[in-house]
Amino acid sequence: QQPVQSPQAVILREGEDAVINCSSSKALYSVHWYRQKHGEAPVFLMILLKGGEQKGHEKISASFNEKKQQSSLYLTASQLSYSGTYFCGTGVAYGGATNKLIFGTGTLLAVQP
Amino acid sequence: DGGITQSPKYLFRKEGQNVTLSCEQNLNHDAMYWYRQDPGQGLRLIYYSQIVNDFQKGDIAEGYSVSREKKESFPLTVTSAQKNPTAFYLCASTQTGGRYGYTFGSGTRLTVV
Image: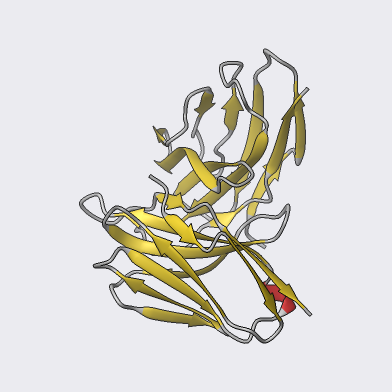
């Protein structure tokens, strides 16, 4: 079952902040975040492995609440280059580490000047 | 530079035909994946392989087949049994262990004519 992402779409002005949420019905081993520009391949942003861990990548950071089976991606002071579709990919814990990811349906982010 | 190469970029299939999509990587990754992307549905897993000569079905394997005879190569065949093959197909690879992000190829857009 695919994780649920919210919101489905968001429009921002440059400099504004946004939060994208990812929620799974299954126990998670890992959460990945990717950004995809139209017609291109998804690009890896970050991976979170521990409950409550927060990681950062420039002005983009994320948190992972293992108990709630949720992750959130935080984009601060957005730039035009942040536009694209963001996907979370969840690694389900089948008795140990797994590489297999199930992706959410995506969140379309548009940053306007 | 290391990466994943998918070919062709665009592919047209006639009704009843089998077509094969190529995926080659020089990253020395053990795990490789095929995902299908349809508008509004995110990425759905077709097949994956953790080691050479072994592969597993993903969530939507019906009408597809794969092989993994070499570590570098993971071709996907879309058979005539796949009734709705028009989609964007993405190949990805990663190191095993569940702690690394995916590297994606640039994708193949398949259209039934």
